[in-house]
Length: 213
Image 1 (cartoon, rainbow, N blue to C red):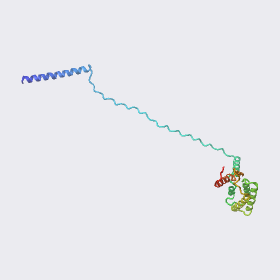
Image 2 (image 1 turned 30 degrees about the vertical axis):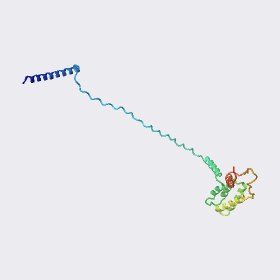
Image 3 (image 1 turned 180 degrees about the vertical axis):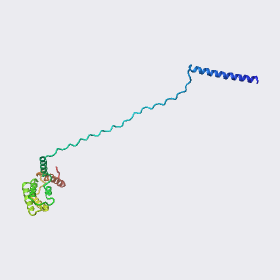
Image 4 (image 1 turned 180 degrees about the horizontal axis):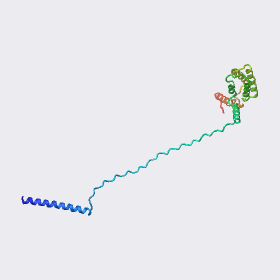
């Protein structure tokens, strides 16, 4: 081996030995005495934040339904009084035509009770005492002719008597007096059709070109 090669090998060996010594010395300085190198511990996983449960709407409390209060039993005297009131009020419901229609529904047997009911209807019909008396006589005459009430015959005599009563001589009204307002006075008992008649008269005058107040 030549001297040059030996010199190069010696130099490389010295450099290698120097590098090893330097590394060992540097490591001893970094670690404290008696300390051993430790492996890095893996980071602990993050704990999930606690989830606060979302409360839904509070269900509405069912409303308390009051128990039905039992009505006190009606005594016989109270029942009789109530029926008497209802019967009295029934006499004011509807005109006498509707009430007579109920009496003769189904062609009832002629009796004194039926005649009394007819008399009650006519006397409470606001048609006047004399008018009611005249119609009672005519209806009673028709009822006495048969054992079964004939509604058609009863209505016929009532219609005829009504036309005779209303057919009174009266001069025609003069609606063209001297210039100025014309006042029409309507008189009648309750339920005879005053308002209806006034409405018809107002329509008639407006159709004739007159001014209605």
